[in-house]
Amino acid sequence: MIHNLAVIYPSAKIGNNVSIGPFSIIYDNVEIGDNCNIGSHCELGVKSMNDVESPLIISKNSNIRSGSVFYEGSKFGENLTTGHKITVRERVTAGNNLQLGSYTDIQGNNQFGNFVKMHSNVHIGQGCVIEDYVWLFPYALIVNDPHPPSNIELYSTIRKYTVVGARVILMPGTILGEDVLVAAGSIVSGSVENGVLVAGSPAKRVCRTSQIPLRDGSKRAAYPWRRHFHRGYPEQVVLEWMDEFK
Image (tube, rainbow, N blue to C red; front, top):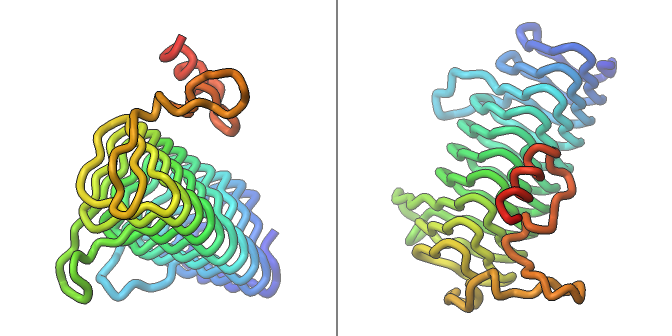
């Protein structure tokens, strides 16, 4: 399961039934759980310049695709899935079922909940907190320097169930409440209350998300999205959502 052109350092801990592709490097400070797949040309456990001593932990049933780079000092829950050629810096903690799209860039010191889903080319600046069931669509950008270049960092938070559209920019210190929808192409700063649609540059409140109709002819509300979109989520979670809205 480990290609003969892969490089595995002596102190790396590799679980059972792990596949590692050619030209990948697994450094000493790495723990990989059972039933993981590591594609070709990956680097796991790259040395940090920031005095990180803890290992990179990849939990079981994860799939890291080719060209991906993970620094030491982060811990990921089960079922991590990545696209190709992502970069994840040190001190990231993540729950289960994190999805990172191709060319995504995670700058480190971040916290991610369960079932956070990022599409391709997402950039997450340092210090961001992203809670459970959040969606970030392609080219979403979260920055943290209020007047670059400086040594000041303002960190952003995204609460549960929020959807961040394609090519959105979240400015330093932005706080998005639960069940927020940020329209594609928007630039957001400050705080956004729960359950609203914001759009524009600068983004402004448009309406409650519950007023947006689902475009299937049913006249149902499109949001909260968990009323009708359940693909890829565990049965127990879906049952809880159905009970919430019955």
